[in-house]
Image 1 (tube, rainbow, N blue to C red):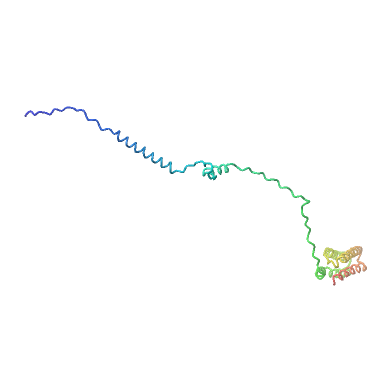
Image 2 (cartoon, rainbow, N blue to C red; image 1 turned 30 degrees about the vertical axis):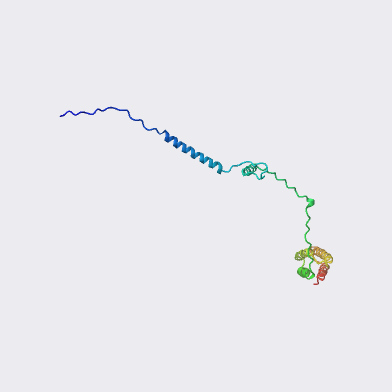
Amino acid sequence: MTDEQQPDVRWAPMEPAPSNRGRIALIVGLVVAVLVVVGVLLFFLLPRGEAPTPGASGSPSPSASPTSSATASATPEPTSEPEPTASPDPSMTPVTTPPPVADPSLPAFRSQVQGWLDDALTGLDIVGETAGQDAVLVIDSLQSDAQRLAESAAPTSIEAGWNDGVGAYQQALTDLRSSAAGGGPTASAIDNARATANQLRGMVGL
């Protein structure tokens, strides 16, 4: 083998890496410039609430209305207690009178009382043919009919005479019942009751 000359290897110091400070400074400068531009734009574009100067329009600023309305709505309104209702004065209460009863016509009144007056004559005939308790029962029925005659409203033209006539008929029936309960109805008591019944029939045109 031939002896070859080996190269002489020596360690040399490495060159320092290039610095990035200039690039970082440039980036930071660009970011700051962008922020400044954005801030200027926002300053001029956004609305600014300024107090009105003297002599300007007296309309309230937009921020005043929400504040005043919010304050007014937040304040609760005082509730007033209900006043007691005064009781009505009895002296002031109007007095209502019932409407007057219509005056019936004579034909209408006749048709109302005709049945009771017809039964009066029929019942008195039966009393003249019977005696004792049977006669008393018939007279009790006639007295019930006489009460209905007294409660019937007669026309004004015959009202006074009708009321007197019904009273006389009721008294005649009372006397007739007394005679029937005492042993037998007397003929005079029957005739008296029949006469008063016929008087009522004549008033209404029967």
